[in-house]
Each structure stands twice: as structure tokens, then as C-alpha cells.
Image 1 (cartoon, rainbow, N blue to C red):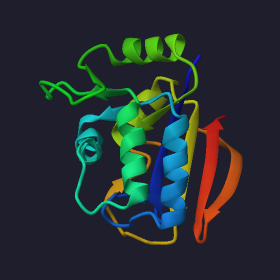
Image 2 (cartoon, helix red, strand yellow):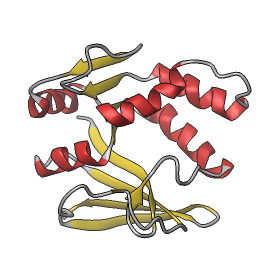
Image 3 (cartoon, helix red, strand yellow):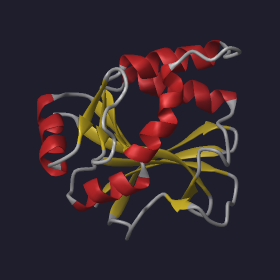
Image 4 (cartoon, one colour):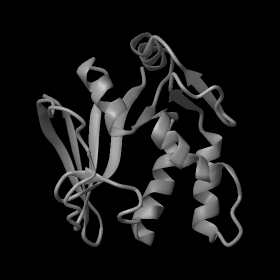
Length: 176
């Protein structure tokens, strides 16, 4: 059975914003290694559109960016959207029956499936489908934006903490 993990960068005041702070090289290396071991990813429409950046080669990418793109492209992606007519390579569109589709993925696959996007994570968390929350805490304060938890925070228990690189800590929580 697969494990669903919601993992995102977060500011000290609880917001996620991929444009507000970029990962330093050591954290980017961590993310490359993480993607290599994933079974796949489930994205909401918005984050999927952001992540499609990795579908095409960009002149000027360094070796780490090329490695991340290759790893990302190699993994299956499931995109939750009622408005997207199609999705890109190695991606499957899920337009209806979200709980049924995600329960099927969990039952049929093994390993870790990463959930991308706070709104999607909130919906799956309310259904009791998220097995682990990974908060990558960055030493910045944004003062606003999209919160990591899109709704009421579910009851959680701290399972682990790790200094990933200078100034950035990964906190791992599981449902209590």
C-alpha cells in the first residue's frame, strides 16, 4: 500500500510560495534525491501548471536542474482538475471521484506518493488519506500568501525533525 505524503516549503509564519524563496543547493539536492525515490506525485491544477516547467529542457540549466527535471519527468503524475482538458507527458487527469481515485492509487501502488498543493492536501486530509506531512521550514517571514494548511489543521503528532541544510528544518508529522 502506498503512503501519501504532503511535502512543501513553508515560511516561519506558515505560508507556501514557490517564488518567495528558492531552495539553496543543499536543499535542492535533497529534493532531487527525494523525487528519485517517489512512486509518483498527485497535483492540483495550479501546482501542476507550475511544475510543468520541468517538462522541457531550458538552456542554461546546471547539472542539478537537469537531474531534477529527468527525475520529475520519469515519475507518473496524477492531476486533479475539472478544468484542464489534457495533461502533459507521464500524467493522468483525474476529473471526478477524487476519493475513489486516490484510494485506488494507495491500494494498487507501493512506496511514497507526494501530494502537491495545500488545497488538495486539505481535501485529502479531511478524507483521512494523508499519511504524513513534511514541512520544510525556511527562515523567512512572508506575512501573507497561501497557507500550508488550507483549512483547520488536523490533529498531528511530531514523528521526526531533521536539519536538512543550514537554516532549513524538515518537520515530519503524522495524523494523531
